[in-house]
Structures are given as structure tokens and as C-alpha cells.
Image (cartoon, rainbow, N blue to C red):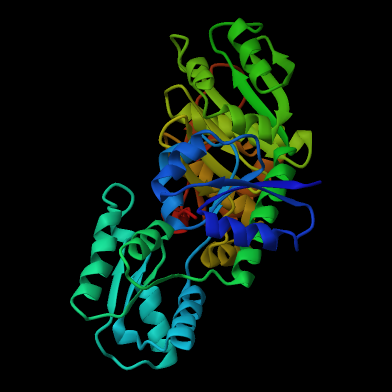
Length: 426
């Protein structure tokens, strides 16, 4: 299947990348040409259907920041690195025989230029370099960069300009100032396209992953018109679990296309009571449903209408639609692995137990509480608790009085440094 890549960039970049794309199987380039990098934002808002967007550099990518928030497809850009700068400097030295100290250079990040000089052992003389990473995205002024090159040339400090920006090159040439554009190496352009193709294919594959949406309603029973509307928006089939709880079965792609929309926001805030929604992904429907239940419990803790997503890799995202954060429910902290081995429990189960403790409103819990959270039988939860008690990692702190016949249930509390095994953000 052909991957359609929307490429946003100036004319010369488009010419080079279109020719190189012929070397890559199953790739179609859809060109969007601008004369100024600021135009990339408007172009992004008017893209026709494609699989991924590839920007010619950091400038158009940054100028499109707000517009990209509305994209439902991935976006990458051609990064300017040391290889690009080194090849461009070599070209100037070879063809123009101009030493570095007589060259004015603009780059996205001046540290790359410094790294090139260090790597080749260039003498520590004064170089004429301006970067624009600090100007992005709001304070960028292309006239400052043109003026930088023009003034150095006018005063005789430089003999040529090397620029990263196509429109700067055009203005310098128009003013009679010798100039050359940075050279994007063919290998780097091909690699950029291959990365874009791989990213698009990965997104397509993941979009087909089984997904479940889990909802429960404390004060009214399904069916409900708002739920039907949500099901239609994510092309889901509905499975009624109880009078007040349902599961919606769909795909990851449908959820991720809908969760950022105003329609989903309206669903969350259309009633008087808080709605807690859990989305789960999985290789099987049962895995996805289990993850959806766990995600919903995180949403319930927020005490406001929101949604969480738990992926098949136990990556947790939420709360949606606002203040979205990432955390991993799989903990590979070396001390945790060591502790799990000593307790004779799996690191995954120990990590879940710690997560369970961190997100409870109270420190005490029962075997039934843990069983419900882990989605295991009561007997399995009790076996895990016994191992932790025997190791001294859980202590019995009391009993929960019941209002029915039967023995009181033991109350437990974790006795390990749970905050030492914190979640790491990507």
C-alpha cells in the first residue's frame, strides 16, 4: 500500500526530495510549496487527505505549531544536524575557497555549528554565526537575519553568506550579496522520507488495534441518546454489561480521532453528574476491556468529567480533554525488581500494587479492594497479600466491620517506600 506524504517546503527542497522519493518503494509525494516559512501554518490547515506531513525544516514545523494541533496524522520535519552543516561548509571551501572567518552563517541552533568546528579541530577564531532557535515561534523576524548577513558583507567582514532559509537566500541574491543555501545531504533526505513512511505505517497498524470504551452511570440506566451518539462517533458496537454499565468496542484509530473533538468534550460535560470514561487498547478484546476498566478507575479519581486511555503497553494517558499527562503502569525500577524477587512476586504485579496504593484516597485496603483493582480473583489477591505480609512489606492495621453475617475483613497497609518507584515521563 502506498504511503502518501505531504511535503511542505520551498521550491528547491521540493525538487530534490521529489527526485529522491523515486528511489523509495510505495511512497507518493504530495508537494505543498511556500515562498516564506510562515506560510506553512496556512498550508497545514488546508492539507488534503494524506498519511503523514513532512516539513522541510524546523522553521515551517514551528510556525505550524497551532495548526498541527488539529491534525489527526503524524508530522515530522527535516532536522538540521552537524552533517548538513559540515557538507555545506565543505562545499563553500571547495567551490569558493572562502575561509570560515570570512563567512556569515545562519543556523537553527548554533551549537551544531560549534560541534562541527570542534570535530574538525578548527582554530578558535571569531566566526560570524546567528541562530534563530530563540526567536521561535513568536519572535521570529526574517529581516534580522537578512540584515545580519548584509551588514557583515557591507562592512567587509565577510565575503559570502551561508543560509538555512530559502527566502533569506532569495533576498541576499536580490541585493547582490554572494550567498549559498545549506545543502541537505541526499542520504539524510532519503532517511527522512523512510522515517516518515515507517511512522505512517506504524500509525496505521496501531489504528487497527482493538479498543474498548468503558462507561458506567450511577444514577440512570442505559440506553441513553448521548451514549448512542458517542458510539456512532467512534463507530463502536455496544455491549450492555449491567443496567448502568456498558462497553463500546471499536478501534484505537476511531478513539484517537474522536477524543480531541468538541463533540467528545460536549459528551463529557452535557450532564449534571461527572462522567468517568476509560479507554483501553489490547491485542485481544478481553485485554482491551481490562485496560478500559483500569483507565476508568483513574478517571473516577478525578471527581470531574474526564477520560483516561490505557494502552496495551500499560501506558496511561489522561485526563482528557484537558491536562493530559503520561505515565507508565509498568515499572522497571531496578530496586523494585530486586524487591519483587525477594517477595517472590512478579515485578508487574508488585508495580500494580504500588500503583494501587498511590492512587487510593486512603492508605488502608482489603483483599477485595485489591482484587477489584487487579481484576483477579479474591483468592489470587489474598495469595499476593500473604507473600507481602510474610516479607514484611504489608502490615495488618485493623479490621473492617461488616453489617452482614461473616467474619470482619482484614485491613492492610503497604509498608514499602512506594514513592521511590515513581513514574517516569517520556
